Each structure stands twice: as structure tokens, then as C-alpha cells.
Length: 253
Image 1 (tube, rainbow, N blue to C red):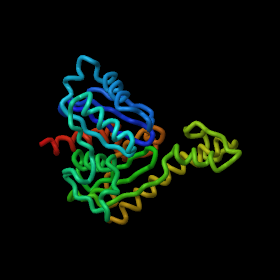
Image 2 (tube, rainbow, N blue to C red):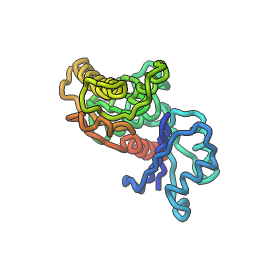
Image 3 (spheres, rainbow, N blue to C red):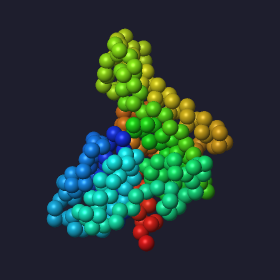
Image 4 (cartoon, rainbow, N blue to C red):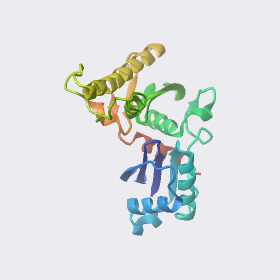
């Protein structure tokens, strides 16, 4: 079995695969100070003590360096396996055209690889999480670049930090765009604002590449908040984990 780990700024997601089948997942709140022993406990909870010995591979993507070290140490000491840590240096199967490929996050690499491998190109991989990211892959499998924008929760939290009298609000669509309370006004601005931003950026990418029908596949922990309003976009809850699985297979040797 393969253990795939996606370490993000907001959540850590663990997935357990048997070949190409995703058996189970676990989503946890990211805590930068977690130790390798605590990582071991998380794996035991996901897999079960009796099945830990069946894990034959570990692959991970991470945007939190302290957790990268903890999970790598867990793989070596607890599972006795050398983990594959995703970066631009491994065999990705796509050509990364960023001026500095090392600046492309490992989660974005995984999303791009999964989107192109599963659905072909040209395609946009949209991730609605801590940041809202767009990764663009050509028909030939070249990673052309992308867009990084503030995420839903990031935008709402920033408003509260800089506005002394602005309250924390639940992230959900209000009944009307025109808010009649501070709470509904913030909800409207953050939710409809992000939705409009996503649609506009998709259209501008399509125009820039001269492909008005370029496909979009979306993932991310906050995607369910706006998924119903993203018409014509394919939703793939575990796109990043799928990318990790594919990358592991490509680098297995």
C-alpha cells in the first residue's frame, strides 16, 4: 500500500492507496510543531496497527518545512521507508516553464500532473484552499505557469485583522448580494468576490491562450463552499493525492 501525504498551510491530508484505488483518507488541522512520533500515531489511526506493515511506499508534498522534516523522519523511523518528497527535481512527466522551477509548490506540481494525466491538456488545475491557485498545462504537457490569489478564509481573516470593528463570520453565501448587516456584507464580498475572481481569471487565461473552451478541474478544502456556482468545472476532491500517487509510480525505480 502507498501512503500519500499532502501537507498544506491549513490542513494535512493523508491518503492510503492500494495500487490506484484510494482506500481511505484523513484530514487534520495543520500544526507546525508536530513531532515525528505524533505523525506515527496519525498513520496508525488511518491505517490500523495490523496494516502498518503493509505500507510499502510513502510520497509527500509539503508547503510547511517543519512538517516536511517530521513526516520524512516518521517514514524512516516508523515505517522504515525512504519517502519520495515531491519537488521539481523528480521525474514529473511535465516540463515546468517557470523561470525558477523551484518556486513551484509541490502541491501545485501534484495538481498539474494529476489534471494532465487524467484529463489531458490544455487544462487549468484550480485549487481552492488557503490560497486560490490556478495552474495551466498545455496540450503538450508543459506547465506554463499560473496564478496565486488570496483564498476565501485568508481574505475573510485579513479583513478582521485590519478592520478593528469587523467581526469573524461564517463562510457561507448570504441570501442576497446586497448585505444589510456587517456579517452578510462581509460574506457577500468574500464569497461572491472570490467566485467572480475565479471566473474572470479562467476567462482571461482562456483568452490569453486563444482557447475559449479550455477545461478546468477543481479541488481544495474550501471548494465545496462555491462548487455549485462553478458551472462547467469538473470537481475532483482528491486531485492532489492522485497527483502524488502518479508521481510515486513515475519515480518508483
